[in-house]
Image 1 (cartoon, rainbow, N blue to C red):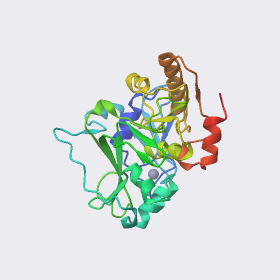
Image 2 (tube, helix red, strand yellow):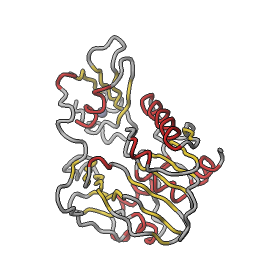
Image 3 (cartoon, rainbow, N blue to C red):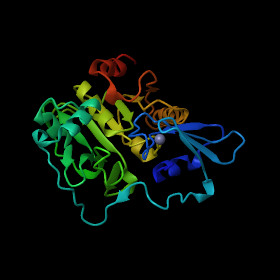
Length: 292
Ligand SMILES: [Zn+2]
């Protein structure tokens, strides 16, 4: 049974008595996107136990065999930043990519809309190209040209996959976040809501749902970084992570406290829903507008 280095790194500080769930990246029973790999640290301490409910295999993880941080999870780009050659025209994308985007909250409603996102197809690796923006401000039907500071390539089908599921590359490893926001042209009004999400597609889903005055911080996971949280400025905050295990829930709570401390504005944790990318737009509007 194979367990990815990313997961090994993440569970290296798993507290005793807790179980965390992950997608089983190399699952022999097929692609796992429902976090069916359970890793438990027994309350008595000792070795980590892993079990996948998809391939029904288990193993003991030798903790001292971890080479924690021997391999950075993000690959920094040195010198000039070369973007991969990607196809940005949605009508040229494979249908597998369109289906995946649509299932993950980004239906291709117009080429203009997908143009905003800068998302593309990378034929060389048969992957979806997801750019990481320093800040992209959408004004109605147009946008500021953003600085791209990194990207992720998300491999499409298993059969044609030659590399890992996600490859992440960026200019500066300390800046693993994207900021997406909507505001009217020339408006300098403060943002009404600041939302923290784990992944880019959840971020775009919120932008689709909220026409203006929302600022979304894509955190690429649940790590709490003070300077990143300090950069999110709004009158009130919502932390909206993929709320499906104890670890994520506790990170969400800590993140909310941290935002309140830094900014002095209220923050609540969205607990009813998992990540926004799977939700109807009306539910997102209700979740973000319906609470003070
Ligand atoms: Zn498995």
